[in-house]
Length: 352
Ligand SMILES: *Cc1c(COP(=O)(O)O)cnc(C)c1O
Image (cartoon, rainbow, N blue to C red; front, side, top):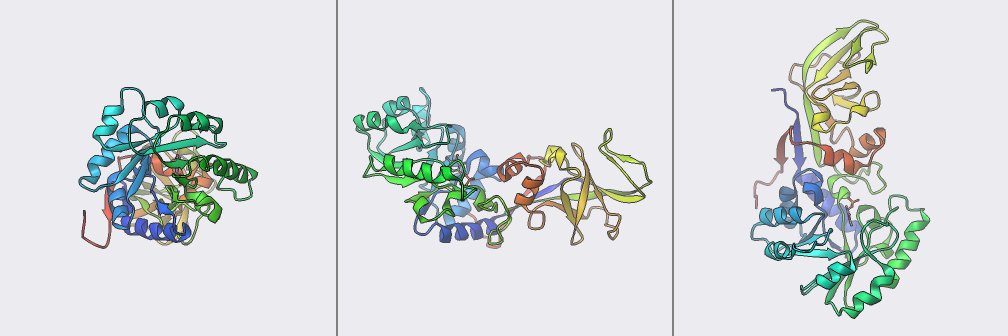
């Protein structure tokens, strides 16, 4: 057994949903399960969140919406597609019962459904209608049910752009008095009541990422990646590990080689900056190659062959790992590949 194991803790997911629900006040929670549920499996994630009370979900791509509809079987979930739709995709949108988020005037003009969702850009400058296109949208007389926008600096509560985006969003949503409103993703939920409106769209916080991209002790790790010890070896001073000069031992050392690598989603640049968790202690990661990772166990008890070391999870926290390799926790999760064996863990055996 040399394969890494990715355990997806659905009870931790449910716990995080509860934390988000409390933080969201009375706002509806629409989990974001794009990119196959941040790499953790949109189907099992969405089904568990349904049992916790979620009834609407966001995905990014049409294909993700189609796959999620299939996964949800007979559940009458509202599935919103952030990309909207392109000419010719109307039939697929209808066939899967998806709600496109309308990002352009062309999409708004082509829309024939009974509950339009509009996305206005208020300062992110990615996709979305411009605020000054609102008048043209109003002329179309669409039955608008939800108006959304997205914050670009919500992880930093002191950033002046938050207030500017909020003011712009308030002015545009007032033009659609019958519609509900949504501005906050995970981080925005914690910016305060003003930012929460009728519906919030958390993604990363449901998976244990803190709203400030630093660990939040109230949230639990949902993804746990573990890899087995394949070999233990002793190094003399000057011995190198891995390719080229990835790591050179400054003195006598003992290392353990783990069966995971960058093909399992661990970043190569994590060498020298990140840690693994073994026998109740954090140990330095010295080298990361495609299939193998070397860790320093010089001052650790001898591990058993096959013993699992944690590379991400309740001890090696997502936000710490992301910060150490200078990326977003979202990127760390969505990189987890399908090579590791996947296990969905939950206490209750009742599965939908
Ligand atoms: C990805 C995304 C979200 C979720 O963001 P998190 O930071 O993971 O909570 C919400 N809204 C939109 C428009 C998004 O693109």
